[in-house]
Length: 247
Image (tube, rainbow, N blue to C red):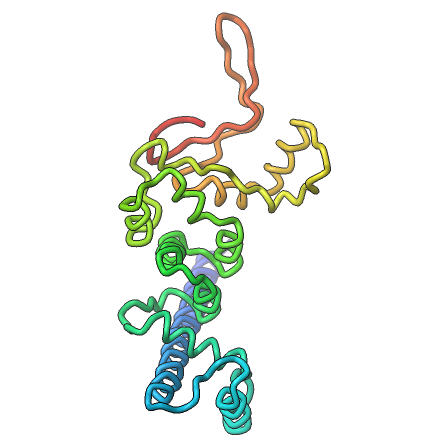
C-alpha cells in the first residue's frame, strides 16, 4: 500500500470515528433532554393535583384528557400510559439531583416499576456503575438480584447496597445465592448432562459473566491441572480480578 493510500485510510478512519462520536453524543444529549422534559411534565401534573384538582390516576378523566390533547398538539409519545409514567417518574424522583443523565427514559420506566425505594436506588446505582442495557436491567430485576444480595446482610448492609451498589471487599460479597441461569433456557423438567450444561454456559458466556457479577473474567474450559503425576480437567476456570483468586 502506498504512503498516500495509507494516509487516506487513516484520514477516513479518523473522520469515521469523529462521526460516530458525534452521533453517540447527540443520542446522549437527546436522551438527557427527554428525561428532563418528562420529569417536568410529571411535576406539572403533580402540582396540578396538589391544588385540589383531580388525581391523575390511570383511569382518570384528567389523564385521558391530557393524553388526547397532548397527542393532538404534539404527536405520538403521549399515550395515557406514557403520561402516567411521567407522573410516577416525578413522584419517585422529586429531587432532580437524584436523576442521572447516564440512564435513558426506558431505564427509568423500568425503575419506577420497583415499589421498594431501597431496591430501586440499588438497581439505579448498579445500572450506572455496570453500564447495563435496558434488557440487562430488566433481567436483573426479574432475577431479584437485590433480594439475593440482601439475604446475607443486616439492615445497615442493605442500606449500603442502595447507596453504593455492590462493593466487592470479601469473598461473601462476590457470591450470589442462588445464581439465576434463566438465559440458558433449560426447561424446568428437562435434564442435561454436565457436558451439555458446560456447552450452554460457553454459548452464553457474556450473560453468564454478567450473572456471576463484578470482577469475574473467563480463563479456560477443560483446563488441565496435574497433581502427583495425575491429570485432571476443570470444566470452567474463571479469575476474580478484585479478590485475586481463581474460581
